[in-house]
Image 1: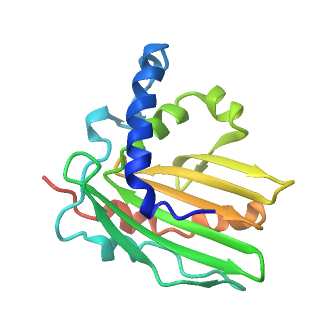
Image 2: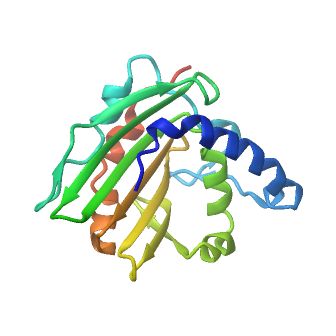
Length: 197
């Protein structure tokens, strides 16, 4: 398991390359708009809306869950990147450990270039299933849950309020532990963070 904070340039280039290719074979044409918690459709232009200056990296870090019982964690970290659009990308993450082999990273990203590819994947259950995952609901939001019981590892991806990409990535853990950390994120406060006009 590798922290993604230092890999933003590579990730952005990869997404920029793959998204047009997938769109050309008809995937993008089938993308449906997200529906928010009130049931209203949200246009694609709402994706990755940047957060305001008042909602900085410390604000995002505060949304990360505290260690669950039996776990310990490193301090939360945050970093800003200029690779996303518009207004740059802000990343907050925290690493958690349990025993000798259990480890997990929770990451919240505002303004992520990965938002569109995650949304496209969520709109195509076959793509999710082909990657060994399934669609579920966590915090009333769509989530892609992938877990390998043989390797006791997995990840969860969620798009929150069409503005934040949340990932939970773990090794040496159970599926219940993975979901527990995803469910422990302070989604209501995250949604309430002010957006940039």
